Length: 434
Image (cartoon, rainbow, N blue to C red; front, side):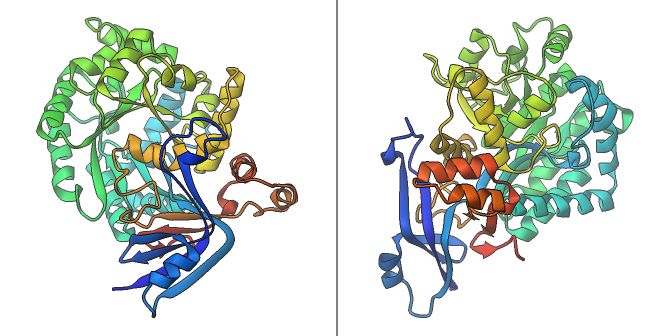
């Protein structure tokens, strides 16, 4: 058994903070340590206590004065869209048709999918992200490349082969039968292999016929413990078109409800324009609304009503995500920086403890994986990020006058990016410098 002691300042959340002064929501150690054995956190707490209990021959890594947290978690992004980022377009549907769909057609080629998979995981660890919920392309080759690279690196990932059988180029279409067979094959090949989790992934209602949605419904019934991911109410033109395609549905959310796709492991990207009835349906089923700040701003989709959803009588579960490549940064720090601004525009506040809770434990809870990731609790997988609030000259100057943990977190969130990530550990192994 290999043992490692990692020393530094530790921060991990017990629950969602109720205010900036809610000190009981988190555990902070100014001189802390984690004892890691075989990729799992075995002990966490004050350095002196953990060191005393550690094996005599333990190897020690000292990250002081940096901050050690659970690795960041991204609950919605598109693996085939790395080369679509920063594409100039008016709105969602133009962006999809002009740039995204043609790019995704390339993922039928194994060599291309494998090359981009390597680059994707490089960017994840460089930005401190250790788990993501990802869309592959419609091609099984893309899912195979994604999960193979994830397995090689020992990462905890959620992903799925996209299902789409209309309103896209021929090279991006499957059929209901093909989407069923290939999704089952991806599940057989990859689910539970290493730390891989397969998600049932109809792209969104516009690109699936009712027949394919029935197939998605069948897969959910056959594999009730799998995640489901799709898109919902991102753009008003998208909403109108969806309702034209499914005239029998009460609204956009009801399309998914009719096919049994709502539930506590269902992740719905965007959810900006939900009606009260739709929000009730999301709440009653425990479905998750995924907030994608940089993407929403870049595509002009709207301002996600975070507080309105979470404070309502029937609250909706939420998570945060980069939404690469509509999103403009791989960094969860930058993602929450933009989230802060979106709330400011709505007369609301997002305090830094809220932000770092969402990036870690909050997103782990949204994925129903908090027993394994998102905290520094003993028994959790040792996925960690080490952060330096003085990583750039501008940050270092601001850091000179930082005198609280809240100030440090807000500095990291507002001015930080991949340069603030000193190291990323995946299952106890340093990955950024590997």
